[in-house]
Image: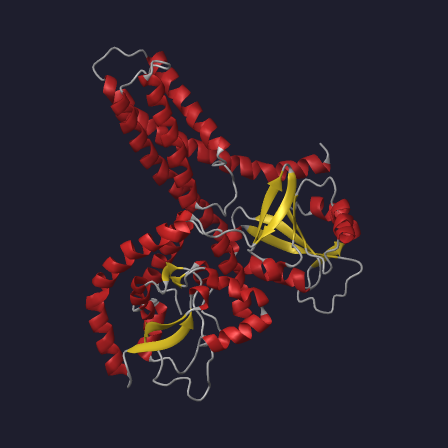
Length: 470
């Protein structure tokens, strides 16, 4: 057995185990629905065990082929649980509708009545959702404990490599175990912050095999084509996934999509955002949730207002000018969490984690994100959305646009109470935090869908209930 083949097996066997575990859990869900609905519908009849087994095997194979085609057996840990369940629900329902249609037109007669088939599908998708959610949650929990991590190396002892390393360490849910770095021969190491250098690019292939590396990230300081091709050549033939940190990343991160023109791959910058969901569906979702939530929170509003009054002098609500969609300015409302006139001496600045301007009640409000409740008024008025990039002050935006010319892109959608950047990172404390959150804001703007909005709402609810705010 060659070293490369052994390396391939060491990487792939854990993935095969996870994929088979997902298949077995899906089969269990299918067996439960089959027994409780399809088999129960023939109770009292003489059923041959072979015939029952054949029906179950055929149905299981159909679901397995469908889910495999959809990529629902992938072993990666960064897959959205909600997204998987939605994919399976839509695809399986389409299959069921097609089968019922074919049965109705006498093309493919079904051994069960259509209402029985629908009942089976409802129970199957319910069981599948519960079992799949539990399986993926267990996988993510194991990843957080360091079980099932995939080894990674970064090629580039430079600020780019530093940045990738920080992201990997900050997000253990990625499932990567950073083994070390590989030095690029013609680069200066003066700005390198980490010390675990495994060797040089000339030894890249051996480093990959000896350390059982599953992922290689190429992060050269200069991303010219010749340099990248040289690095790729060094890793050529090694059974590992290779990722490249793109150039112009800070400029167009999240603003580009790949398209094809008669087979020619092109990168489209500033794609069309005026989708049907963005125009109408998102606003409808805001009103459906914001109006009942506002009414529900009214009793808490009175309690929080009294607590703020008793804790410190000043108004209950904090009002501030912010910039919204299409650069329009509006007044944002929040429960006051700092002392009155907190910025009189400092001017417009972000709050730090141990900021002495935050009151005792304010610290509690921030922890559970309750200081944002009054912004439901902004949502109902149409100035904000429940989900979107956080609105910023005009004076700070002037500074940010000078630093990041593409910052204005955030104003193409309504700002939100919560957003993708907020559940991925804490409150802004310095300009570098804004730079980090821009990646998430741009990703959200370009990937704006109902699925993503629901995922953000569920994550925000968890942050509020768990008190993980700041």
